[in-house]
Length: 197
Image (cartoon, rainbow, N blue to C red; front, top):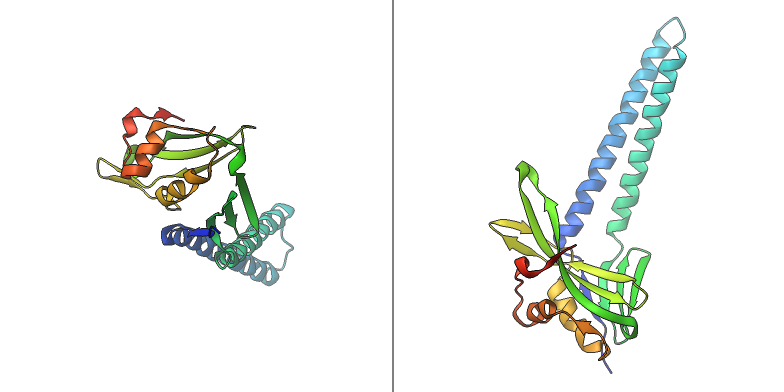
């Protein structure tokens, strides 16, 4: 009997979620403090505030409350699993209560393509992606950690380990790109040979 393999998200991915959550939380609190100050100022004024002022304050209050709530929900999400599970019959991507499933028997093709991204300072780089494509066109894709000319792209998951674990479960009819096979065997990618996404 084969065991389920679990690949958790990298610590870096969780830190990115945490930073976003704290940023939203702080911005939300800051906006609510601004609303409280505005309210205090209007109470101290003898004449009532204009409709425009009330509208702006209400909008800022709603934005602050939304930021606060989304920040809290995102922090709660950190306590839920963010992982990929390789079972004997399917690949499962879990992110909290959301899941995506790839049935091995329906995989038609496994390919590797490159995706382009812009970085700070007008820098750009390409990084590889492994795609598991089902016969109905649905797919699950995983970014690969990659270094090119000193630029680094960090993936959320260990794509090499996931791909190595999934390939033996696929049907004989599934077409596996040569680049994917080389990636599994050597752990390296020739980015210039990959088609652009």
